[in-house]
Structures are given as structure tokens and as C-alpha cells.
Length: 109
View (tube, rainbow, N blue to C red):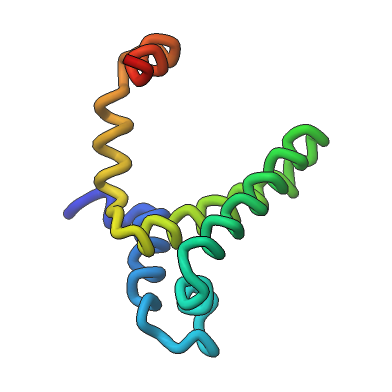
């Protein structure tokens, strides 16, 4: 059995995929996707800002909640664009063992 299939992020991704063509009246994910990529990105940005604010304030419980919102909206964005979680995991694996400074420098070349 694929360990990633049992991961909560994979289950959330699968749920969002299953709601892609659902009625916007019945599914928040479907409603977001029906509004278009710009609205999805806007919601992701709003949640990211809220996450940053809670981190600055040191409010752990609120940061946990906002982090979950960020991950949810990121996954909705992935689904809308057609990105699979495996694409992200592969990119993270590619970067593994490389310092962040080296990795960032390699992008500017």
C-alpha cells in the first residue's frame, strides 16, 4: 500500500478532486473553483497573510488553524492547475540534501 495514500494531505487532495465537478451550492471546493483561478489564488493569499499574522503574534492555536486553511487552499489551487501532490513531493525530494542557500542560488542561473 502506498504510504502517501494514507496521509491526510493526500486524502484532502482526493476529496477536493472529487468535488471539482460538484455543485457550488453543495461544496466549498466546487464554489471556489467555479469562481476561477484568480479567486482561488486570492483566497490562498488571504489565508497566507492570516497565517503570517498569527505567527508574528505567537498565537499557536490560531496559527495551527490558519495553517490548515493555507494547506486546504493550496490544494484547491493544485487541483485547479492540474498539479498532483506527487509533483510537489518529487520537487521536495530533488531539493533534499541541498542547502536552501545553494538551492535558491541555482534558480537565478
